[in-house]
Length: 415
Image 1 (cartoon, one colour):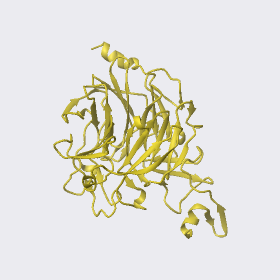
Image 2 (cartoon, helix red, strand yellow):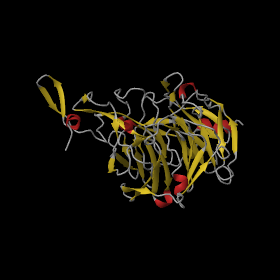
Image 3 (cartoon, one colour):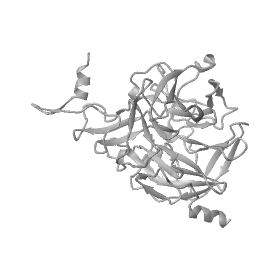
Image 4 (tube, helix red, strand yellow):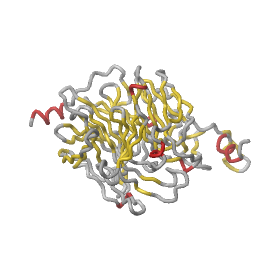
């Protein structure tokens, strides 16, 4: 039996006394015309397909904003995009895949490319609704843009049952292991949780053995961390390095207040060796991005000269309550920041970025403090060419290999 509230939300919009208008059901992939905003969506890459999971979306129905219920609603499907052919952000096909797992925001995605699989952990239930017991969920792709969800049981359930699921931690995948550093737990991240809490330390999950590890202060580069980004650089060091940047360090002993918490300036980054567990601090120079900054996105590219560039875009200044609209490239091994041309799509945070098509960054979604301010980017999608340093609305499936842009090459030629 369908409730009266559900009927109102899905079918009827009352415009005034005696005037009733038929309203279409909400969509997980609305048209460009109806799309307003999407945020807190995570994304990963498997083969020739992008997979987007979780988050909330706002949209028009019959040209109107739904003011009777929430302005934003959960995305109930996993969405895939084909990268084997070129497309524009206005005509890209967004395929919706039914999701049997929990509907959440800010989920952690760990990707096992060798098994064509990714795992979803943590995050928060949208509006705290339909909460269930904590589980790890696995998505197995079918190689054609689809796939199926199922629960992944842990190899060590006694440890798993004592883990505290959270959101806003820094996460990345290192070979066959997923890492999550810090995070914040609340009544929307865990069923029956009574208080908000910054989670100390770090946890890891081995995707081959299905074993969990709860790293305490001895193994974590931070006591606490919220809103930062972690990025794995495979080409530096014998085991690669995880770079952690930005975010805040809320108290683990009291109610976390992110806006007044100490923050990590982007004039310094932390490098973590996933094999030895050693941590290094590295100063950066150049056009250092302003801080504090959290909820920004990153993507990385190995260049033909053996160096590595990390793209950083957007984010929120939670201390001063505004969103950034700027983008930067951090070039390694020089650790020099270069500011890139500004996007015309405006400020945004809590979006995802992926390196795709050899030299392109795809930015997915992003909010600016208002769910009804229509995103200038069609479907919330933007593309950035790392070599030409140009924002585009077209994905090129045949793009040339990445080469560092001339401005970064000059940095090294000048010493």
